[in-house]
Length: 413
Ligand SMILES: C[S@@+](CC[C@H](N)C(=O)[O-])C[C@H]1O[C@@H](n2cnc3c(N)ncnc32)[C@H](O)[C@@H]1O
Image (cartoon, rainbow, N blue to C red; front, side, top):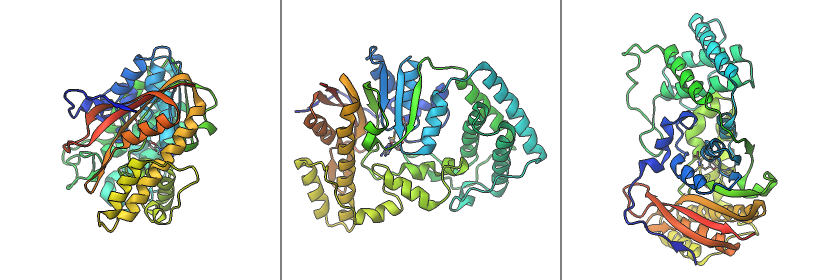
């Protein structure tokens, strides 16, 4: 049986969330809510000095991979979202001193081009209700800036990649998006930036310098960042791994794509709302746009996760009398079937004695708590993992029953 280890006082630890990532070098390049804390990753990786190869099958912004390579380990990481794969790849690369100098020079050239308007502006990205994101002047500036970066740095060069990271920072800073909550919303008023007379080029230049500070600190290990589906992780990872540290999607109906849309459109990873919906449907726990209607007709696969706890949770949700209860039940069953497929295929990429750490929160729908950590532990035990435990990490918000856990186990091999 899996064991719950209860710490005496479990608080809402800001140092165990993405907030801590925003101030530290490359980890702080972009503030994206799917990130988890590098503190917990640091702790786990440091505790396993002999783990040479570290896997994160749900890469996100690359927190695990970057931490691993800074610790001199090799990292392998997979994500289904091409923008996140691009970002994690740039974050874990080695940059030469001349890459850094050339990027600073390119930044000066780009800002001069933008000031002179001597480039055709980029086409406006097809973001729905774009005027909610940026007013007309700001949008024009961003279109010139984006075109200027392509004109000066070509494509697929280290300089181009670093300038694009800085562009993402500037683009989101100049937007009306507010990240006060776990998910994004819009500020009620236009920002004060125009009244304050802030010069947009200096915002971008500052962002380039912030990015270059991180780029100057090269990791010792190397990372392999792969676009793929973690359900079939064995198709992408062909070398045995010694340690898995990851935070998979939560079963809470939050769409990662929704938050990442502006970055994805501006960098050319998305061209339409339909594409965004399709990608969300491919993602585990995806629930946005087309994904919701597909759930209604979704049929369980042959390799399904059968569990008494899951059955009783689903039963309660179906009987709660809510009109969306049936879709929600399908959502949860699909989520756990997908994770079961992932765990089944994971075992073939683990070296004997490999430890896994899944940082995951439970969820609550209507009045039913879904003990995701318990279900993960059940899956690990069924597959033959040993020493399976659910260690509480932090409270997720003011609801006292919502907790984040580290679900861990050792692969017997
Ligand atoms: C909670 S986030 C990971 C956050 C990451 N630990 C970080 O610090 O940024 C979960 C990630 O799983 C990815 N994901 C969802 N379904 C996937 C799948 N089938 N295969 C691979 N990645 C997937 C999402 O794109 C998202 O980036």
